[in-house]
Length: 182
Image 1 (spheres, rainbow, N blue to C red):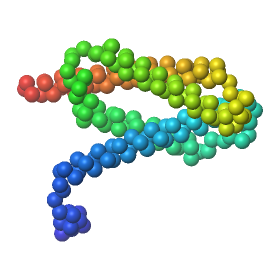
Image 2: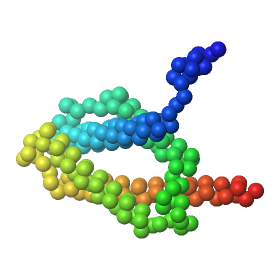
Image 3: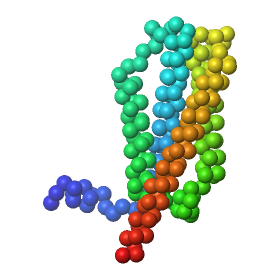
Image 4: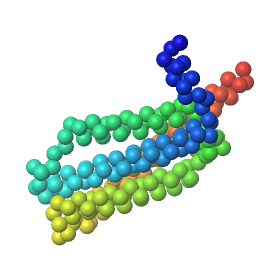
């Protein structure tokens, strides 16, 4: 008898309801952790920019560990997105209901994501300025412009990612339809 058989005999049969609930809990935890890390990383980026602009760059250093954490968040996020797309989890909802890309619907989602990101970036940059140079050192217009530039970039990136996900889901549907026709 293998170790795996011993462990499975000890654990018993899996209750599908418990597995489904645990998956929900882990999904919420993963999203919360990812969002929190993303906010932390954006704040650190804004903080380092403020320090550089104000000549305080010797107080701010980006360690190799931070770089690895940035890369890890990027790899895990892309990996989960690609895995979900390849498994067909993106084939539901708007992607499954239409043969044409719903440009208006996803333009609104991308625009909303860009606007939300712009506000978050503006607020985080102002908090970084408040921390490093005080309230009198907040550069309101520069912060707003930087937030808008990042927001436009994020909105464009979201729209492109929605389109690429739609194309992948459509290709998957066509492959499955061809497989069922045979």
